[in-house]
Length: 525
Image (cartoon, rainbow, N blue to C red; front, side, top):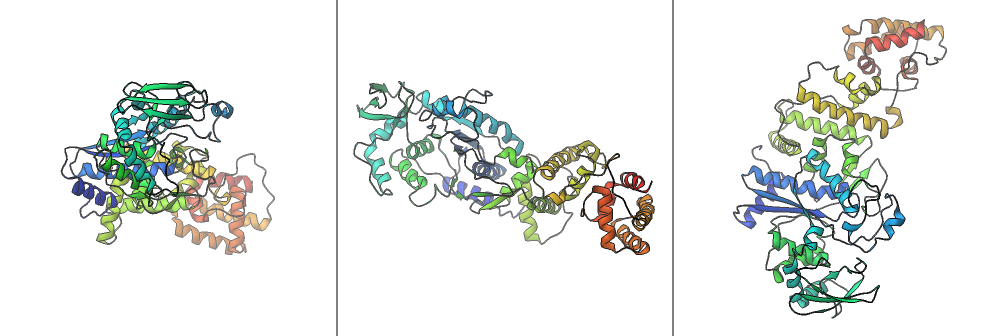
């Protein structure tokens, strides 16, 4: 760990130790309802917890990192991106865990959203212990916690009423029931016997039934009671929440009072995290609507380390954008600079260097690289890939000195670069080289003269660097009697059939002698 580090994850870790005292194991928690695809905004909570967990472990502390799938919550809305929506409509008001996966790949709708994320998280260095709330509720694991809520019914109602414009009615109960007749939560609690017996009516069928909290799978606590109950049961020391939960009178405020006054526990250390915007790609982030940007979408464009870097390098309470537009190039450049600072290749002030080094450490998926990764700027990589028609192996072979781990990481960057250039980049960033058999325009004698002179320079490309080749191109234009801009336009027409392209000297060096000569020779033949 970098010395004198003052990263927000370290500050939070120190606060947890200070406020919770010296403990054998610290419990850090996160969780979500799998009501739809887990979007990148949800991921902000997961990665924020992981960064704090890592900071605690680096201080020699044992940490239990739990992630709760609230899959016994009610299925309220059919997302737009789901197949067979008419079938899913029939499961509204039932627990998410019994809703079928209409894609046919998983055991249930909840299972699909859970397993897809669980498979991805180790790839970005996140490996929590998963808790499935449906399993716990169905096994009556929370029977005691439910009974405590019933015993303190008036206390809970008074806490919730503090922030309500209209108070909860006297007949309100701090539990909900899934009807054993319909599986829906459209029920009315009628009575509680003061011990383990709860009686309810199914509103759809009119049937009444008595349940034993110690054996039933049908009774559940509402969110504002369930959350603090679990804080107490799990002994949670740290859990962040979105700014909506942290607003005055929000669920964190009420949960703090419920955990103290009902369950005799203590609210965890927390901070609020802000929302994430999406730049360069349409769609509002909303799990229930189905219009989401999820972790797989981000990993299409960003290496896992850079995904972590986006979050490690930004304070949680700061809103920021996940970009798919030209900002992608700058984000890669910023990460590469951070990496150079860490390995001492680029010097900056000591204070800034400490900050950058700590961000770099926390950005790594697992162990820090033993040698500095091979840096190829994303813009240049995009040009190389397009020049080689997306052949990643051909591009990697251009760097014969790559060590195995460097090659593996650069291969990931190549895949991300190809995804970005072919899917999200502006049209003027894209090109394909003219191929044999492509129809060529007619060129004037003056233009052919210029191309012939340029061919001579390309033939001796090994003698050039970017500066000397640029000077040679200007000299060719002058010798041929063309304006330099006219020569540039001519060259782009010849090479890629466009008016503009990457900086010409750099572009020719990127393409290499053989590719450029092959095209020029077809024009001049």
